[in-house]
Structure formats: C-alpha cells, structure tokens
Image (cartoon, rainbow over all chains, first blue to last red; front, side, top):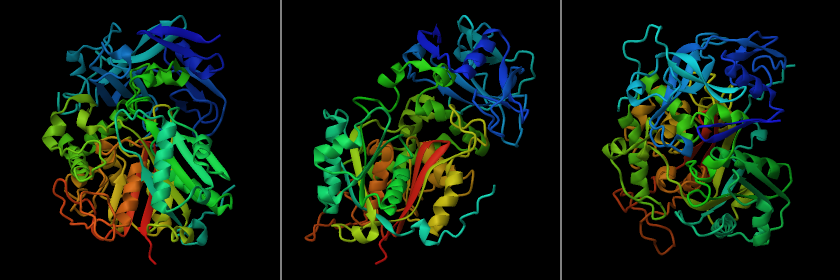
Length: 173
Length: 422
C-alpha cells in the first residue's frame, strides 16, 4: 500500500516500491534524522538514492545523523506558485550544509539538506524571524508530521549555537 | 578498463563544418494563441520549409522535445504529408535544442535519413504555464517530488534561487549588475517586430519591480508565451542548395551535466555558483577548434537574467566571478563587443525553451536579422546598424556564434555555428 498523507492541503504519496523514500520519511516521523550510508564507501548521501554515487554500491544501511548545520544558500519566496503556499508568503527554502561529512569526500561536497524555515513550534517562520536568517546562520532540524509514519524534515534557528554577527542576506529587504 | 581518449578533435569523426541549419521558422509569439500545439507546429514547420526552399519530400527526419505539453512528431508529419525515415519525441525543455541538433547530425551520419526538422510547439501561457502555476502546480506530489514540492520549491525560479544567491555571496554580484541583462535584451527586442515585449527597460525598472523569489524580481524572469519554432538540419552540401545561406555547425554539446545531480538539481556538489557550462565548454570549444574570443554573438539562455550571466561566465567569456561586471559592461548589448540574444530572447521575444535563440543566430550569420530596417530591391533588409529604438538589430560582420542552452544549473547544451566559408 502506498503511504499517503495530507500536508498543508496537499496530498503527498510514497509508492510501496519506493523503499528509499519510505524509510527516509519514516525515520523523520520517529524524530531522528537518518541517511543512507554506503557499505563500501562508508559515506552518507542525501537525498535518498538507489546506489552510492562514489562506488555504485547498492548496499547501504540507515544511520542516525545529527540534524545540525549552517545555511549554505536559500530562496525567499514572495510570489507563491503552489496554491498550498499562498497564505505562507514570504517563506524561506533553505539549503543547509550538515556539519556531518562537510567538505567530504571532496572540498566542495556536503550533505545539503533542504527544508523550510519554521519556528521551534513547527509553524512557518514569521517575517521578523526570516530577516534574521541568511547564509551562515546556524540551524537545527525540526519535523512536521504528514501522517502516521511519515514526517518532513525542516529547519529552525539553533538557539544554542553561536550565530554569525550578520548572516549574508539579499540586499533588498 | 580505461577507454582510450578522443583528444584529436580535428579528426573527421567530429564532423566539424559538415552539417548546417538550412531553414528556420516560427509562428507569432503570443499570449492566447487560440491554436492547438499541433496547429502551431505545422505552421512553424511550413515557415521553416519555405525559408529553406524545401518541400515535404525533402524532409525524412523529425525530432521534437516537450514536457507533457505538446504534440508528437508522427502526428505533425502526417498532417504535412511528410513520410519519415526517422523520428523521436524527446522529454525535455531548455538545453534540448542544441542536443537534438547533435542527435540529428548523428542519425544523418548513420545513414538513417537525410534532413531532420526539429520543432518545439507550446502554449506556454494558455495551456501548460511555464512558470509552474495552473496545471503544473496541480500535479500530484509523489515520491522524490516530496523533497522539493513539499517545501513549496517547484518553479524554475524557486529551484535556481539558491544558485543565484550563492553567486552573489561568493563574488559580490549585485542585483543592478544582473539587471543589465534585461536592459540589453529589451533593447534588442525593441528592434524586433516579432517580440512579445518590445519596451525598453532600465536597471531601475528591474530592481524596483516586485520580488518573485529572491533574488528574482518580476523583470528578471522570462515571459510565458504561446508559439512554435522549427529548424532544419542537413549535410552542408545539401544545405548549399537551399534558398538561404547555411549556418554551418562547428560543434555541439549536450545535455552535459555537473557531477552528483539529483532531484534538487545540483546542490550536493559545489561550488553551487558554478553551472554545467563549466563542463560543456571543454567539448564546445575543443571540437570547434576556437575559443570564446572568436565568437561574435552569443545566445546565452535567459530563463532568468542570472542564467545568462552564469553561463557567459562559466563558458569563459569572462573570468570566473566577473559575470556581473561582464553583463553590465555594455559588451552584451547591440553595438557592444559581443551582443547576447539579439532577438530579445526569452526575457522579451517569447519563450521557446531555447529554439528562438538558435533561429536568431542563424539569421545573424546570414546578415538577415528581421529587424525594422527597410527591405531593398534584392528582397534583403538594408541594415543601418543604427541600434536606436525601432531600428536595426543586425550585428556587423558576424562570422561565428555560440548558443548556450540551459535546463537548470546542473545541465547544459551548446553549439557553435559559423558562416559558410565557401
């Protein structure tokens, strides 16, 4: 049976043969971020795939990974495209460098994990919070439940981390 | 097992200078075509045949690219009474044109057919909107798509935004610098009677237009239009028998990818401010036997102002990181050192997923840009080279052009064409 759930009024579906995505989102629902670790390479990868991009190895295990990182870049949406996001603008789409495996196996590679900027309570970040976040901001992962056994990873400001004095933001507010 | 490298690009197998574009055609560029994509396709192909001076019997190959928004080749060929020896319908948008020209060369070289029509027909405003609203945003979200559409990360502008912002962060590129791309292309479009948007814009107009998705303002984004475009590829000796001078193909690349592509395009492998043109350039220039300094006119894809800038930089038309300086220097405008998208491109003329930029460069090489100049007794435009509004858009002495196609930051196609040396 496919896993389905309604999220912000959108129906999200994972087919039963899509084992990689099922496991990825199931771990999120359990509250710990997991990634596939290639058996041969010992390297983590994101988003879920069917083989290791460094060794082509199809064997892997799911391992827990700390959901902490630094904003590498972002998009700040003011004109919504999908109807579900009409009430949410402006909202941030973050591309976050995880601390784990940053700069490996080559200098410019990193596990860059996407998500929206949410409050610690899991609401879409209000405009005053969005203005605090830019390239360099330290963030931690939070999860939004979609259905039983299915949650999405997102990001919020890491209150305990040392933050840059002024993270880089697009010059026009 | 190590394969031997093919480093001698001057060898005959690279087909440099052996194939040509012998005909080009298009419909009007409109919003509200009131025509099916099937009807638009036959219209554009008939114009390309007329341009080449060819009949249905002269064509026996057909290629088309689309994304669940168009008509397939056999139906179009049947309508036109063209009997095909080869056809293929390819999934894809931007970066398809040049890659399909490469496929056409390959199948002709293989003896499978003798002349290939390539078309792109779309109601990008009326039916399947290219910006992603309407039908595209209503498609169910399944599997991998959850990783982006689940985050309200769907349209091209939204998907590319982190790349564009990171370039600003890495190199200090400013919104004003990049706005010059729209300024240049709108200047070109003002001398193009076919262009959907013919008004000239200033840097202030661009940066004061509303924000769509930072760093993109409304005027940093391309237009959505309804239209079809078509080109004909054949061997150079056959092209020489056609009505207009051939545009001779020197090299093609595509679709060439960055490492580690995925559903989010290219973010796992940095620097994310570098795009696939960085990889494509080594094939493009090597196989053509020329460098960026030999190119007179560029056709760098302009889905967004930033796209044009990033590609010109990564193909080596300026130093890495200096794309902002290059596009704001006047070099890319008519009258500048190397004008880009002299038709107005996707920002102003109309959106075709790349083909109108190839058509424009063919006309530039023929010295026959369809601008506002008067037509002489020989039936050709008498170019004035006065680039003021409503004037000329032909570049002087065009010998060689480069088209730089783009699907997204992680995938590119490109092509160099030259005037027939004969």
